[in-house]
Image (tube, rainbow, N blue to C red; front, side, top):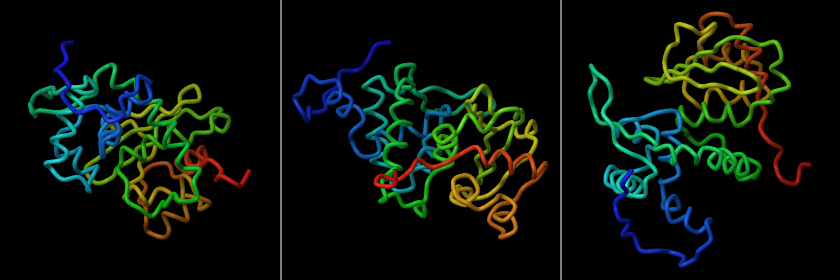
Length: 226
């Protein structure tokens, strides 16, 4: 893969790999763009929908910079859509453990505010991030998530959560709602049936199956609480 010459002025003049990583991903929105692409290619409008605070101009600039750095590439989606999308390169996908570890680290801060909006991709990545594998023994099912135009399936395999976009017909249960509405059931102390009864989430399929699935996750302890 031939990369474009990166002409952005260096910030740090430091040979450390951490400093170079910040040259690539340290600009505002850059790391979150990578986050939005971790579950597969997305069109410009889809990326912007997941990052409602970014302007079209700034998003265009960040995409260009990340492409020049070799973090992402442009591709054309298969027919019938046949539109331009952005996808992480193999090297760009290697940033996933960094994104996940950084997110889990930051969630330990009391400054974390779960009432702020976040994207469907963020919720799906949080499932991977917060899974307690020891709770999943004997579980073999797929749970679907519908959040507006976004649909995902989550399946627990060998102590990991595998996420696939779409294909809800294979799900034993499908939960529907806004991303924030899932937090009390997945990472809080409110059982899923209670969240459903309050009208925050809708469910089709096996409610008992979805209820058990929601017990597999836990937020890390806040600093000072150990």
